[in-house]
Image (cartoon, rainbow, N blue to C red; front, side, top):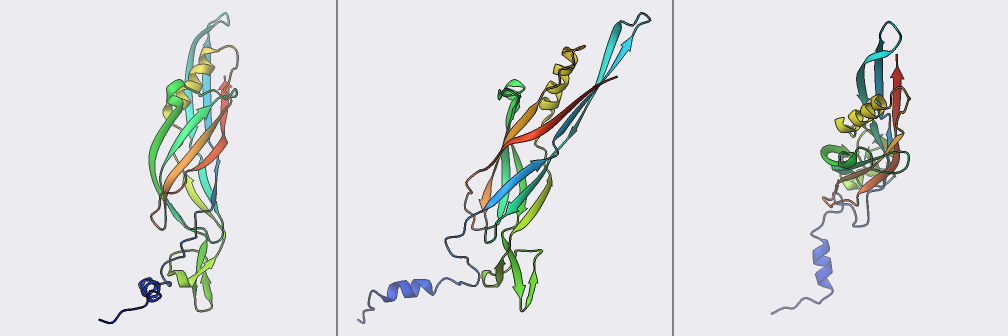
Length: 207
């Protein structure tokens, strides 16, 4: 029986992998997220009797969900988001709204990787979806859009605090830590990506 030398084994294994479609083992996800535009507005209307004494309060709360962007480093793998965890804190760093101030949610979105695609002499910067041999390193900003990071319990607690403090104008100062989870383009679970102290603008008005 003819025997192959041991040196032939890695050569045979290498032949099974197509380098044109498969990136090297080294690439990782290199992304930095930003969260902007989270806003809670509490409007309180006070009705007074003839002598000027408050007799009733009505309130309306409006919540604007923040936008999420990812700054993607050149040569970063893309990823698919599968969810996030949020912890909302007050100005002292304590968790806001008790147990309602920390929660997890499922969420799906793909974040393109740090590549553009080359066809001949033309480079398409709008996509990273091509065979690896045609990928060109390219740093990009991916706009995921508005993401529902604020739950109703947070807005309701902000409203309750302001109304209960009347006539003092006590409007809470809030921020949040958000951790995103998902998997990369090689179907590997990513190291969770965290944004700390993302601002939540809270505006309280009385009329």
